[in-house]
Length: 218
Image 1 (cartoon, one colour):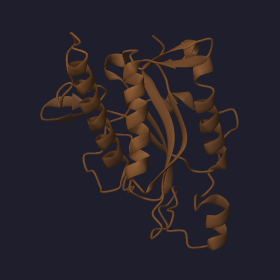
Image 2: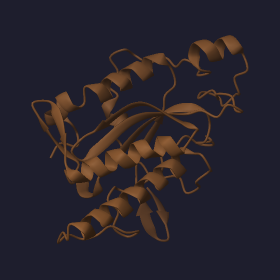
Image 3: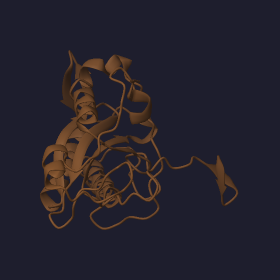
Image 4: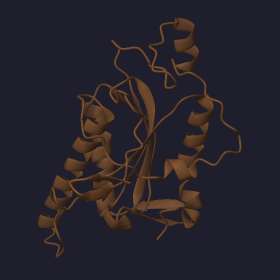
């Protein structure tokens, strides 16, 4: 571990020199503070949202209404975390290779692979350890980037849940800059090829059925 201001910190697993406002598909995982199961419950593999979960879901979908560069591919809300596949697509920008950061200009490659260079992955290689390892946010938030999107979403959730607490006069601590509803960290993974996309997509779709074996199960 490195030290920052004489304190140990976890090193970021963000891709070095990667522009997180680049056109690409991103797998995202966001976890509630202290992994508290306050979003929903799962009964017979069915997700039943709590009021806080309904607020989070509403604010999540609103994010895609107000941000033209975002496309939602997959999404699931679990008791204490959420997974999603989110695409950033700006028409005036090309897709960038995730292996050597070369702009893809071949129209056939873009049409067939969305500009992503295939990566060799063993079919049976487990993805959960990498997918569920929550990492530190990037210190720089570029406009129309993953980090700015998530920061805006989390801020909106804090505000709306605080309003709910006030409206219902709940005897619980409100959320602010020092007490976030979600953990300040999140995991992101740049999806590099169709195999990864299908693997992660299936993981999200089946997540509720595997809740009892989930790393975040409480």
